[in-house]
Image (cartoon, rainbow, N blue to C red; front, side, top):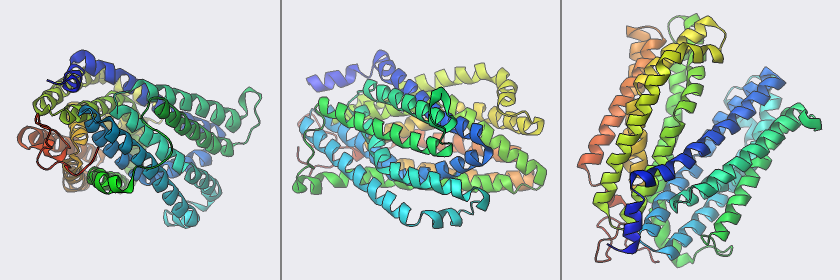
Length: 473
């Protein structure tokens, strides 16, 4: 076993898994706090601002699809290169994704600015909140290049197993955002009160600070040297692997978010109009709790992609499979215990989110089914991270998209509109789709050679069949 291989194998121990996971849990918590702060400040200004922020945030999810996809490619390519001991290749990939991310962010932002108001009209934003939504939309579009850099540079840190630097950066971003949004949005601490403009520009400056700090830390860590892109000859060989990983990830993100929009439409059109409104409110409130509960699961997803990428880069295919199973046991086991502990407190959690008894009842129903699905959801998320680290995002695309469009949505309509004729049918369909999704992913993990999507090196130094053997170091 080489030095690189022994290091990679050592990090796959239970202690190594914990060392990588806990900072990412905190990082996800601070990311949650950032979003919560903006929503809280917007709500304190007035409901119109809060509604406008919600609409614009949903639009931003779609515009960040390319950034998330490039992040998946970064974790796979950089992690595998470092696992193989190819530092020069890793540096070139980091430079390529940073430049590519900044370019894509600029193009998407410019395109959005050209058709900004037209898009809001297509989304049928009420005229009453159109000026506020338009202001948020324009400022957030200006934020997009920095947001791309911030997201992708965080992935570059994770790929090199550095989870402390992005955690510290996320702390800085959350502090800057909290001070700027609350201070300039509400006029706290003697700062001028700019209202919703303070919230919008607070996001801009906090993300810009995070992106700049990440680039500085990457340079200090030796992962970025100078400001030039890799040679064009190398890009022609190295870029196809990034596209191979990023394209299915981008397609999956688009179909996933579109699926949620359709799910909201199915819920909003339930037979009883009053129940459908309460169900939509309960679904929205329940998803807020869900986003907090699943922060550890996201951390397991990212840890899986890091470790599997490094192990496959080092040629340790069997170890990659073993660490995947280990992560499944740890993630599903710990999150199931958490679900059991939360179960008795579901009514209290729902009451905190809404004082309306009918909405609270729908929130309780959603969270009950959600807690039952936790082992399956966590398994699916962890297996998705494993496939990302291996570069096998094609499997994620096929399974996640099929689970959403061929299982969840048809079942939600049939159970919600025909069988149960209420929101319980929709929530059950979500549980059924998670069982299908996790079972299919686990079957692929056990039976398919998902390592063939990587740039894995064998002991004799050759590349695994199906890997990207044309990439120069």
